[in-house]
Image (cartoon, rainbow over all chains, first blue to last red; front, side, top):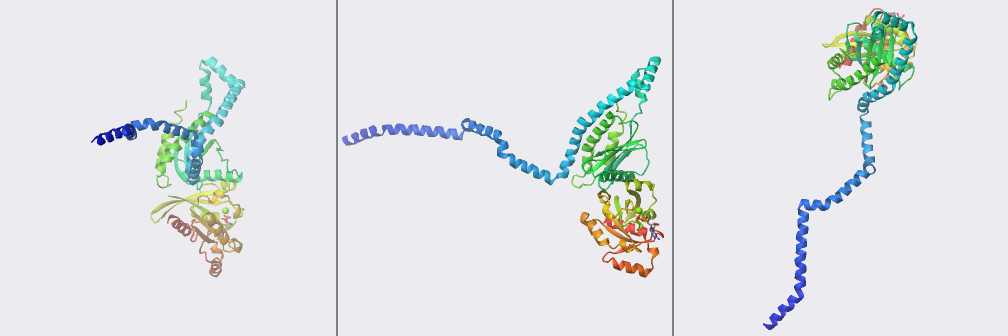
Length: 280
Length: 160
Ligand SMILES: Nc1nc2c(ncn2[C@@H]2O[C@H](COP(=O)(O)OP(=O)(O)O)[C@@H](O)[C@H]2O)c(=O)[nH]1
Ligand SMILES: [Mg+2]
C-alpha cells in the first residue's frame, strides 16, 4: 500500500502540470469552437479581412475585371449593332442637336431679328403704329410673322421608302407615293453627293419646308408651312425624338421586326394634334 | 401590304412605257429628270390580298452600273426588261441579274421580253431560247399584251 500511495504522489507531482495544461487546452478548444460556430463571433474576426478584400477589389476592379467586361460589352454591341444604334440615335441626336445647332441658330436668329427690326422700314412702321394705336409693339411684331404650322408628318422606312405611318390634317396627295418620292429625293441627293455620313435635313418646295429627321432604319418627314424659326424647329426636334423613343419602339412587335401602322398613326396624332396650340 | 418594285434594263427597252401601260401616272415626267426616278403606285388584289405596288422607274440614259444604290435598296421585287429586237439589251442579262442577286439574294425577279409587237413568233421563240435558262414573259407596251399579267405574276412571287 505504501508503495501505492508513494506512486500516487509521484504521479500527482509529475502530472499535475499536465492536467492543468490539458484543462486549459480544453477551454481554448471550446472557445475556438464557439467562435467558429457562432456566426457573430466569427464575423467579428473575419469581417475586417473581408472588408479589406472588398476594398481591394473595389480599388482594383478596373484592373482585375476591366478587360473582360470591356470585351463582353464590345461583343454585345457588335452582335446587336442595330439595336444599339437605334437606342443611341435619339439620345445622341438630342444632345448634339440641342446643345450645338439650335443654340447657335437661336442666337443668330435673335441677332438677325434685332438687327432687322432695328434698322428696317418695317421696324419704324411698327414703332409708329404702336405709338399711334397704343398697342404694344411686341404684339404687332408677332402678328407680322407668319405662324409656322405642321401640315403633315410621315414616318418612312429608309431603304424601301415604304410608309410606316403618317399624320395629315387634310387629305391630299397619295401618302404612299409622297413617302416614296421623299425617300427617292433624299437618297438620290445623298447618293449624288456621296455623303454617307451626312444626310439631307430639309427640302424647300414652294411654300413648303420639309424637315427630315433621320433615324437608323427609318426617317420622319415633317411638312411645314409658314416661317420656321429655330424655336419651332427645336420643338419639332424634341417632339420627334420623344415620339420615336416612346411610340416607335412600342410599334415594333417584341418578337418580329414588323411595325404596326395604327400605333404609329395614333402616336403621331397624339403628339402633333395640338402642336401649334402649345406654341408659346 | 406595300411592295417596292424596281424596273431594270437598258435604255429604250420600254420600262417607262410598260409602267405607263400598267398605271395612270400621277406625277409629271419632270420628276424623272430632276431626281432620276419616277414612282408610281398601283393596287392589285392577288389571292385575296390587297397589295400596293410602288413601282420605281429609273431615268434613262445611264447604264445599269450607274444606278444608285438607293434605287434597289429595300426592293421587294424586280422586273428585268429587255428589247426583243436589240440583242445588246439581253446579251449581258445573266451577269446583270447575277450581280443583282449577289446583293439581294432572295429578291424575286421577273424577266420581260418587250416589244413583242415588232417581231414574228419565230423571231420571238429564237430570242427566248437564247436567254435560257431564264424564262421571260413576252410583252408589248404598245398593245398592252401580257403587261398586267407580268406585274401580277411578280406580285404573286413577292407575296409568297
Ligand atoms: N413598238 C413598241 N415600241 C415600244 C414598246 N415599248 C416601248 N416602246 C418604245 O420604245 C421607246 C423607249 O421606250 P421607253 O419606255 O422610254 O424605254 P425606257 O428607256 O426603258 O424607259 C419609246 O419610243 C417607246 O414608244 C413596245 O412594246 N412596242
Ligand atoms: Mg424610261
